[in-house]
Structures are given as C-alpha cells and as structure tokens.
Image (cartoon, rainbow, N blue to C red; front, side, top):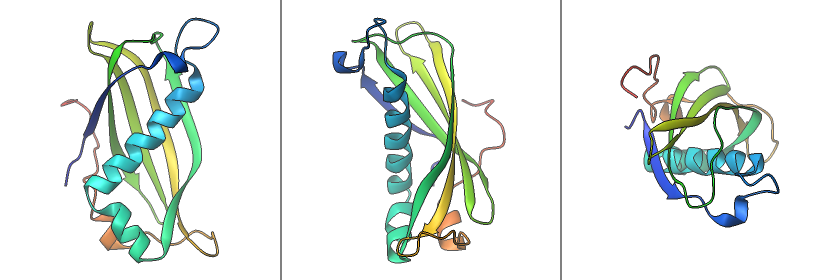
Amino acid sequence: MKAFYHREFVVPTEVVDGNGHVNNVAYVQWMQDVAIAHATSVGCTAETRTLGATWVARSHQITYLRPAFGGDRLRLTTWVTTLRKARSTRQYKFLRLSDEAVLATGATEWVFVDAVSHRPRTIPASVSGCFELVTTTEDL
C-alpha cells in the first residue's frame, strides 16, 4: 500500500496552448491518468473490476500557481484523503523539478458506481483497504 504515488514526465509541446504554456485540459488528463496508475499499483483497479464496479469523477478542482512549459520535467504526486460511503477525495500536486516550484494543486471527488446501472455503490473494504488515507502532507 502506497500513500503517495509519484509520476515524473516531460511536458510535451503538443499540450502548450496559444498563451505559450500548458493548457488547463492537460492538467485534468494528467490528474486522471495518475489516479488510475495509483489505483492500479495498489490493486484497486483489479478489485473494482472484479466487483463489477468503476469509478467516475464527480468534480475536479485545480488551483494554478505558476505556468508549465513544453519541455519542463514535472513530478505529479497524488494521494487519497477521504473514503466515505460511495465517494473518495484524491489530491494532486504538480512540481517542476528544475526549480522545485509548485505549479498547481488539485482535487477530484470520485464516486464508486455499479458498472452496469451506473448507480453509486458503497465502497467495500476490499477496495478502501487498498489505500492508506493521508491526513497531513507534512512529509510531501
């Protein structure tokens, strides 16, 4: 079980917009990608499928602090802060490695749903147990 999950990558030039920096849509895609990678790495994705369920995003929140540019090497970190009846909150932090600048922070509220009916389901212990909840980010 990993509380924090990290992914490092180089910003591709294809995600740079007309303003010369990374487009906001890229951040949402990266948040989704790292959430799935983290869930897969701890066995949550396989267990969720076995149960005939899936996760859907209810909301995304992003606070942009500094721009990212093509060629920047970033570290995206994610962690789970809450698991409630059918919902989970996941946090994110984007860090530029060259200067250790925090570029953005974010959160997604995920809902655990039945894969057929698409109705919310109670998160079972076999799924919630995949994650170590983070209540403080002092070690981040």
